[in-house]
Image (cartoon, rainbow, N blue to C red; front, side):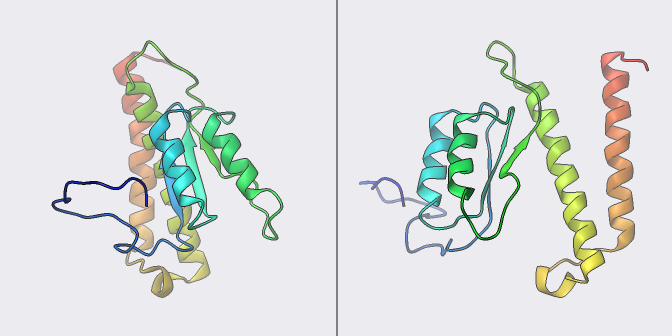
Length: 157
């Protein structure tokens, strides 16, 4: 998978025979959705799994176009493989806003999946070992984060 490395890798080795990624669900996180590394990873993973999703600042990015083509014409229709933070392109700004927006989006996805597992009774097959109270606490912390950000920035409703 990827390039050959003439120098032996130390620590965690990642290559064709180290992991079986066939059919796995992959989430690529990229602010711009157009930089080389996420696009390269997306290209490499397409040979292993069709279940590739991206978190990007906008819907219409290079990696978004690539994934829309991958998911077109499948029997199981995925409405969109692209999660967007709606931060937009910010070429001259630190990534602070993008990081906060990505964190908020991933937290919402986690809450949704936790609720889905609880409702469908999939705790055993998903490996989930949490209680409904855990979901409630996470939702409360998410709302508290929004209020804390408003306090930090001086925003008032």
